[in-house]
Amino acid sequence: ATSEALHEPEWAAILHICDFINADQLNTAELVRVIKKRVVAKSPPRVQYLAFVLLESLVKNCDKAFLEVATERVLD
Picture (tube, rainbow, N blue to C red):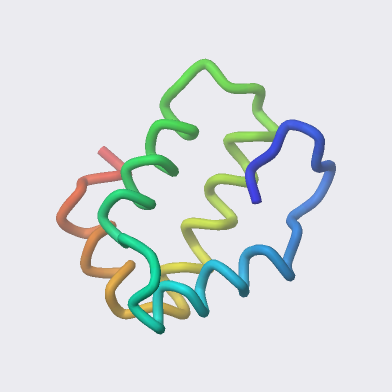
């Protein structure tokens, strides 16, 4: 969902990730840490944008992701 090859958000992949989190098939804490790395690393701006879109989607659609984002201090 944050691939450098993407030019715009891949909504099918983002919603698929949300489904995995809501079904407890994905470690939410690890996913949030990985997204944070994509944001703070010297990634191209497009990758950072895609990471923020993914993060926003997770927060809006997954209660567990919201809690992890709040405790991980992603936006510090």
